[in-house]
Image 1 (tube, rainbow, N blue to C red):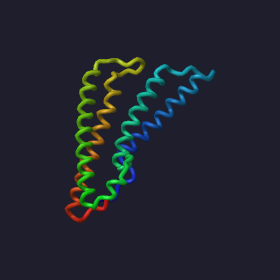
Image 2 (spheres, rainbow, N blue to C red):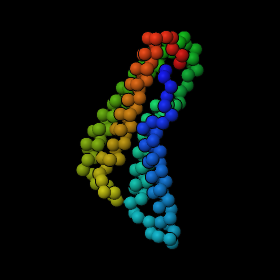
Image 3 (cartoon, rainbow, N blue to C red):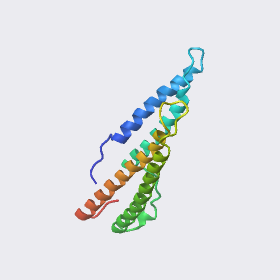
Image 4 (tube, rainbow, N blue to C red):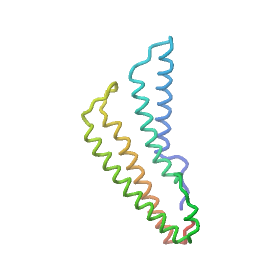
Length: 159
């Protein structure tokens, strides 16, 4: 396939959220010392940022095709059979992630009016993280499938 870019939107966003998370955790740590009294909202904000960072990072792992896999049986197959196997797995994965995106969307709608404990927003913002991650993963799976199709049309794949 084509060479992958070193940085992506998903990776940059996950990194920025991680930096914000470090800042909020530092506020929490120093807020427990005699230096100053830490704000109450930092605990909830840290949890929310952790969830968002983790979900966006899942899409970055998918972009890099870095998920765990046990390919010892697939490696025994001829290249064309491996292509079909990985395509079938990606199609199932695409269906599952599409369904998870739909569940995430329904959850956002259901929690739209739930107020948070300390943050000036609704719980829907937290639950949107799962939906956004699922949509980003769907995007990456579709791109991989398109790239795999283009590769199989031009030459024998090297998976």
